[in-house]
Image (cartoon, rainbow, N blue to C red; front, side, top):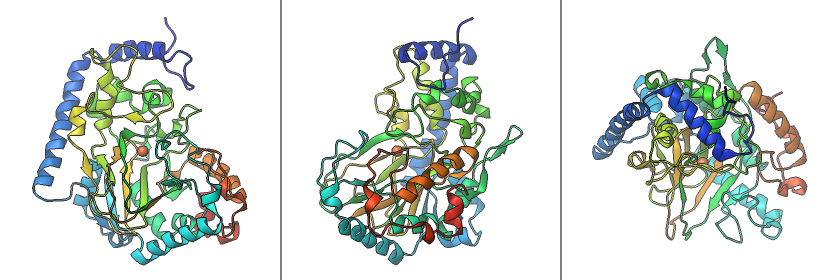
Length: 418
Ligand SMILES: [Fe+2]
């Protein structure tokens, strides 16, 4: 009897853990090639649907008016497409004028606090190759615009709508409360006109190596890892809230996010280096099974390495790359959302036309794990420090005009896990 290859902490010998994991999963699955072929056939049919929609000039992603969410008027067809594609654009999530005002306020906030002279360069190695006197990603968390957006009724309405797409009760347990949200303070991006950028390659967040080696992810993906793709449901939250990524990386996320998302603070055209996704939530099945095939070295996982995002590439995932779809044009105040397993990246751009400004605000529903992190964030908020999932840059501690406790509304107070 050998030890289990799965571990809640980063194994000392990662290559050996990968070899042992592959042996065990192949035993569990049986005919890996047959399972992979079944998954590939499903992905192929989804990609054909994506290609057909593009050929007909239809949106690949559901584009939903905020007013329809607020009034409970989203159609069953839109919900079906959202489940199928795992992504959505919400039009008019905030009035365009509100979002443009927020953008101006953010500029005032960093300028009056002399950020240009304080900035010491990127604090992490994730976006670190983008050299600039001002960063593209600002390590700013507690500005009034960010907090106003996070605690707004409009944000709560969209987050609850998105949380409800998940099966939050299963296996006799309630995994989260879709009607309440926790704060997940993240950064802002401001990319000026004229930018030339290589973009960001296709990847998924919320764990890389972990998706094969963490006991909790073994439970999340139990049907796949037991060879039964028909039972696998990317929208079943079972065990997702028990996932704790390996410590030590700079891209860690301590919360379970039903969706990642951002809110546009400027108008952005689809061909100006914006977000793309591979809008198929079950593509994760392909990513997980691909390294178990014989042409991948026994101690490798198609380019996965500890403490990095999970890369998706032409080399290992050509079928998936065929599904690459860029978001449509958005205007300030629209928001964009994608399921936490969905592959995404940023297109390259040369001499960008217009600004490319967003606030990252995901949907982080109420559960023990998220409440615990939100409470840690409360202390950071009060001191104006960077949240624990991000580099300890703490630029805002002495800044004027920071959002204060006394500015919190009921949503804002509750979002800190109170
Ligand atoms: Fe990402």
